[in-house]
Length: 147
Image (cartoon, rainbow, N blue to C red; front, side, top):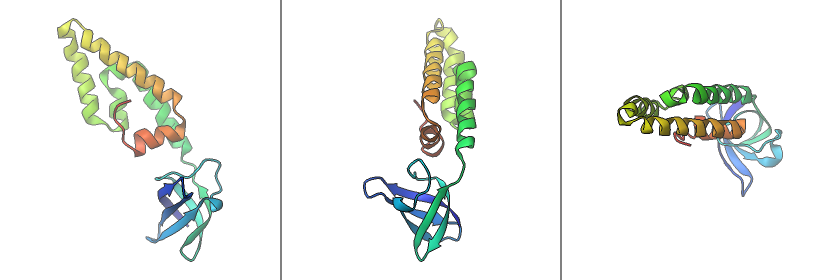
């Protein structure tokens, strides 16, 4: 059966999976079959034994996260001062802020524009340094708009 991890507690090493059938199943880390620990939002494939999920495998979503991470990093590097990476990640308000500050920054001798370009460069570095899973958890699932 397929489903999504709703929550996972690293201390108790247990969690809850919402199956595609609408039922919820308990997850124990002993049944987890992937190399990285489970995270809330992970898509999984698992077997059911009563109300317990067994043989839980993470579905391959890392290629999507990786491609989104690389595209966001490239946009931050080349068009970051215009907020292109923010628009790409779905942060419209923050993208508009960056775009307007960059454009109107030329009125104030370009200092605000340089600051926005520096922020975009810092975000480019942060995007590259984060692992694919951390990037997805922070910026795609967690919706963290700045840094």
